[in-house]
Image 1 (spheres, rainbow, N blue to C red):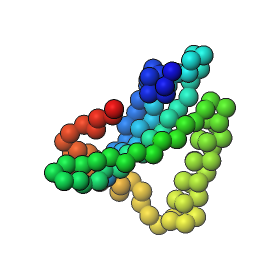
Image 2: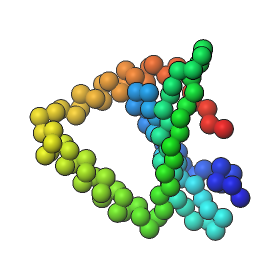
Image 3: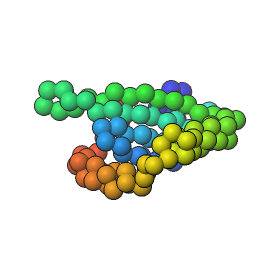
Image 4: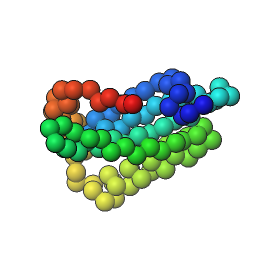
Length: 108
């Protein structure tokens, strides 16, 4: 069974400018679960756009280690490298950018 044919259990999309991140929970042949994280970048081509995709697979035995490392890394950037930046300012910009995506991304 091809990875694309496996059942998608849960999906969350995060739009970020010209990038969109997809967090998808899928099932394996043995009814186990894993997470795919896909970054899709929009590039103009002709009259439309093409999408460049990069995908990462995350398995259950690595969930906690991954989340912990991500949280520690983000906290380090926020507190040690950029303590004077108000990261909440990006929330409004994100809402404004969502309006720029009038059409839905389509996956094949």
